[in-house]
Length: 172
Image 1 (cartoon, rainbow, N blue to C red):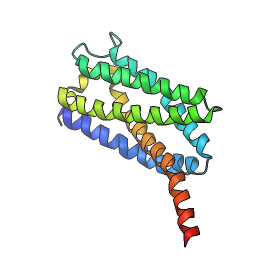
Image 2 (image 1 turned 45 degrees about the vertical axis):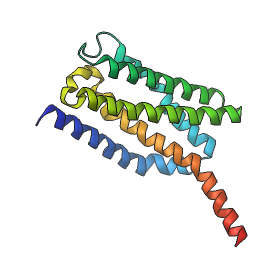
Image 3 (image 1 turned 135 degrees about the horizontal axis):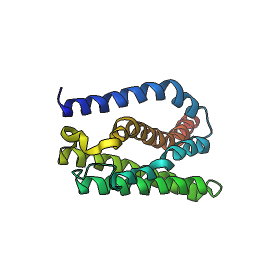
Image 4 (image 1 turned 90 degrees about the vertical axis):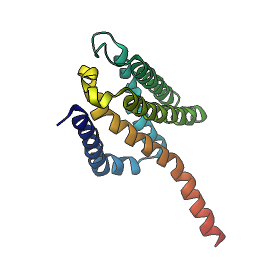
């Protein structure tokens, strides 16, 4: 099996495993929570994205890892992590909290999508060895991050959907 096939298989199975885990354990827990608490839980996970700076830490990844990929991945994760921390710090100031919740999710999704695009452009799946010890990040951590971003957007939209349903029921 080629490196590219193994990498893609690992990535797909990372999404499958997290989707199964998330659907069985995390989603029922989040769904039963207050909206603010659910977003705080998601922000807590994303607050650890400062760890993405490891992509530019000398001696951790291969010097062959393209700088264009490493820089955007590192700083996009860092920005997302800081925005998630700001959401957590401003939970008592609701307008700021919601602003930071939206911001870290928008920045985080853009970061992951651009990282996927850049990874394909630089041939990363065929050269997974460039990631060295950070290989686990895109395989294990990134699928959970993307799933929780999608969940956060769903939870942000859900109250409006519920309010629309109540309004429609009242109008009928």
